[in-house]
Length: 353
Image (cartoon, rainbow, N blue to C red):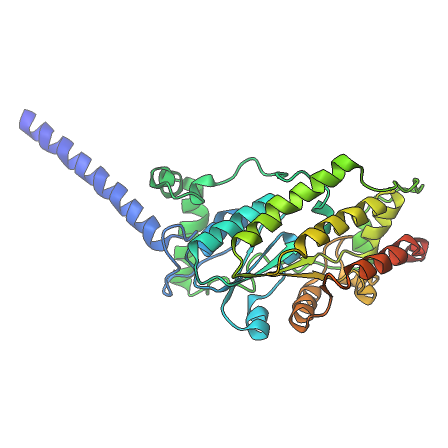
């Protein structure tokens, strides 16, 4: 009797161990977040949660060009980058990210992928006047971002991962559903136009006096923000090329700055950032604030900041053609023209019926 109980116990332990081993093997094989290896061609993958998928993309995919940025970069199409610039491109966007989060992920990509040569990087214009370490995401899947195998249990034995990723990939594979493409990944197709902008815009009815500009403390904060998150990184990789551009917001964003008296502060921050980046020979800095036909047309925007996918495509063409390139020779003139235009623009006309 005792011998039978012992055999039963050993059999149960063996079955449990086999089940655990099978679970580990299945997660490793499917690996829907690409934590262990690059995607297999015989498995279909659903790419949708940026902060869970991006590190795997940057860690294991084959590429020499990367698009990285906030929601302002989500509608970029890597296929268009490849057509314009050549090479192989992936996209890793982080909606709502601060400069620090983007910089950290680019650095990890550069450390892991020696073939990476070109970075196309959004510099969100509304994030210039912030602390260098600003971020808004406290809960982060850090177990996916480090190289510690011990905390991989949070990935392998995670019911959310199993339900939303592993089983989803298996179902897609069995039904013949193709994987999410890099062009489709993180992209959005939302209605644009005046009524959609106004639905998300609370305009101050009374315009306040314009603040003269940034004080010394704020200027130092902007300089630290740009230095730590952009300049230090690009200087560590002098053989790489970084295409960085100020995100071209709509005229309603500029109205917001005007109504709240913050526009001159924004121009001061832009000048600080521009002068720091122009000291980096491997940075190609672009500014599209003079593309008034785009900026003044509400049909190009879903709110005061976010432009449509057509504008993402246009930005890539501008960059490839060198249009909007900022240099040491032209940046002061460009900035003065920008100030003159937006400080003296008749914003009320944008609200006429």
